[in-house]
Length: 359
Image (cartoon, rainbow, N blue to C red; front, side, top):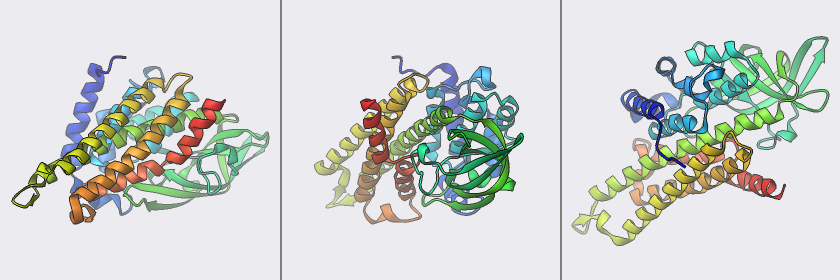
């Protein structure tokens, strides 16, 4: 496998890294991520102008990328700056719109004139779509939805929602609704950035597919891959911050980076991060293959374990400052902890790995 980025991906990575470093210093991120609307709408428009959203879908679907490696390039840079823009929800929504031939919607999202989010999970169906209880009812040619969706990433900033609901035939269908027609309660996650609870009470909907279970799983796996790449970017930065702190902090008249025990711990983090990077590369290469689900589940499980270790070790090696709101490292540690929980944590992914290997 060739691990070198293509020229196009290198250009996206470099452009996005420069933009985020300039426009998303950690002070700005902390200022906007915890209060409504939990992101910077102006910056979202600028990201669209840079063409970043086009990298998430293929050329024949209106974009210019769409492969697993295009997703990882974008989200690794987001992880490096803890960017709270609602890219995750739009990634999953974009791929579903593209999968069902909704080219006008794809074009609008890529241009930045529309935003979407995927509403799948529920209070009793956090990781298993077979447990979805939200009901889709049909009268003539018209569909309505009733139920409640939880943890809708990007739902706080969406114009439309793509909702997974059970049809009268017992299948999981995919429906589009106007966000304004739903009862949406937005909030900040513990690490900043927004999500929403969505209530549906006979809300009019457009059916994109009455049997969309596999397409929804594929979109969720694209989201999980994105989270893995975001974690790799965040871990890289947090390790560098920890190393820099150890070199500056003095104890017994010398930098504590000279203490062998701390050197060993820092090297252990490097090994964990490189393993996380390698398995993310593997999952990116498998995204459009029959082995997608297993590769992504393995990656998300390892990322969950590695992210927790890096977060805990970084905080411990920083000491008290590692827990303070003003220090950027604490926000990286919180983000790594939250990434594990999103779209199925390490235990959920381990269950998926066992089920897929047994199938």
